Image 1 (cartoon, rainbow, N blue to C red):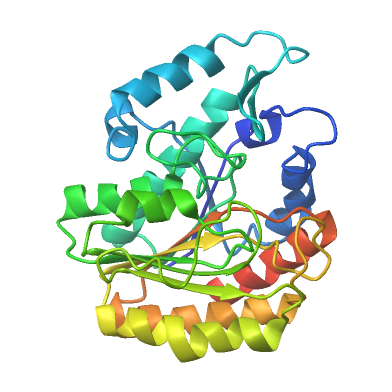
Image 2 (cartoon, rainbow, N blue to C red):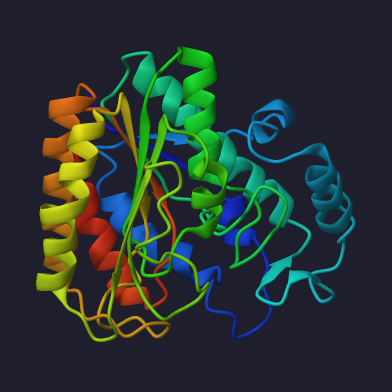
Length: 310
């Protein structure tokens, strides 16, 4: 049973202003490592999310605004600003919809028994998009949409999102905050954008934040997961595990100061696999989030994929 990789050329076309960190070169950096694994990972085209899938998290008022703003852009030289950090060009709405669509299609592949591991290599990322707000480079809350889709379509009881991006996933947290069957666990640098993710933000007992101080390294990163967050998720016994796989906690990343190494992402992936085997029949859906040093992104993503396919 091959692991499944979702990609689409729109991810590389999503336009941002010159000098923006969430740039098309991120996909270009991943190209060689994905090609090297083509005999192991079954590649599929990321489908475009249906409106009703996006509605699982985002209200029509927000979706209509996004369609109007991003859908009207015809010129890559005149992008639209959705918030101070978040932009859209002629191909951005398609890319964002296919990112959300890949997340839902990944759920279908897992729950249909076609694979135990799915990775979506798409941009823009998703974990900062709140139900009614685009922010932090993100248009749609992909992980939260996948969780709601899995619950509605397959009647799953408990779903967990594990987020190791260096920035707190405020969008996922906002979507889950009052829902005791949706669990969110996150390590992130604090203080850092977006300013959320304090340890006392616990929702209804379903939110588990473990902020890390500036300069913290792999030892602190792994200890947070092994000693606190993964045991909490084990106790929750999720039916499905979704990873917000951001690799910007790497020491080389320009947007933060944590000093996590490539091998630390491999070790954490192994730990998450063990959790999945104990709780969710091994099912893991991993969605690309951040990672802005191109070499660190490629190397970290490579070890993540290799562990998922081992």
